[in-house]
Amino acid sequence: MRLWYVIGASEPHAFYKSTVVLVKSTQIALYLSAALLASGVAAAAVNRHLHEFLMVAGLLAFYHAVMYVQLPGFINATPHIYATLALLALFIAAMAASSCYGYAAYAPYAVLHLILYLRGVWGKPTYYPNIITAAGLLLLPFANSHLEAVLTFPLASVYSLMYRIDASRARRRFTAPGALSIAATYVAAFAAVKAGYLWAVVAPSAALTIAAPPRIGDKYGVAALLFRWLVALGPFGTHLVYMAFAVIMSALCVPYFIGAILFRQVPSYGPELVLTALLSYILRNLGILAPSALFVLAIIGYAVIRSIREKYYPPTPP
Image (cartoon, rainbow, N blue to C red; front, side, top):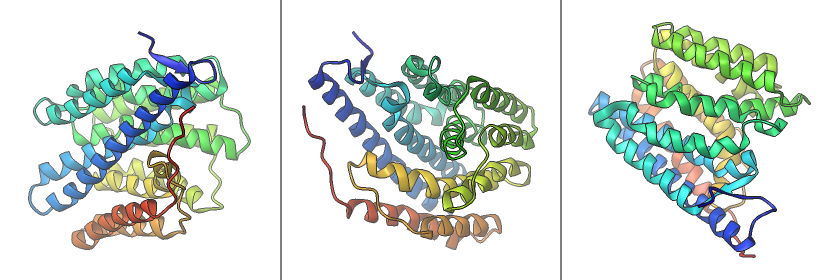
């Protein structure tokens, strides 16, 4: 069985069906993420361990949706229907099993996802950022805590996306040395975190800034700059890391990728998402929990409402 349908060189109907199934699978992951994150917020007042489990599971589901919907563009091919369905099934099974077996339960999911990336990790400049994502997938089963899990695939996904975006905005080419330097320092930082040096996450942020300096002329640029250094504040509190993802998700993934997942036109957001996420970040880390939780729920609800109100663009068969 073939694993991919190459863009522009595959039977049109088979390629179309595989692409539709790919997007539908990311919709399921996105809906699951919204449910997990909302449930995690509600669980904060009841059970700390359940809260952490649900929030990290929601974050993993979110970045699965965001990164997998872009995979055809990242590797110039769409995975076969069965590969997509198997990957989604492995993700859901791993999420359920991780409550008993930890993040090692994600090993089958990580291996298959890595295999799907293998077509596009070398040989073209547009492939090089995939090296960073692949490193995050490789590390996911080795996470021994919720914080470590956040610093695997979710953090690598953000680094990869920021490398793509900020290098392009700075008019720099993606290079193998640039991507490898970020990936290598990221893996080394993860090893240091496992040894207890939480501040080590500053190293890949520095490597990213050298390879792809941010431009702070808009809300994305400001959020991207903040995120690079907020994730290094782990020694002062884990929520300084967790809640930093709310900031970058509100500036990057929600406004730019959720529309594609839902086959909808992208809403025209102002600064409200980022400002709400920043306010939630500040309140949570000041210990003001209830308003912070309400702001997170507000972001989820607002993004859902704004998205479903936009024009629907169903895929057209060949």
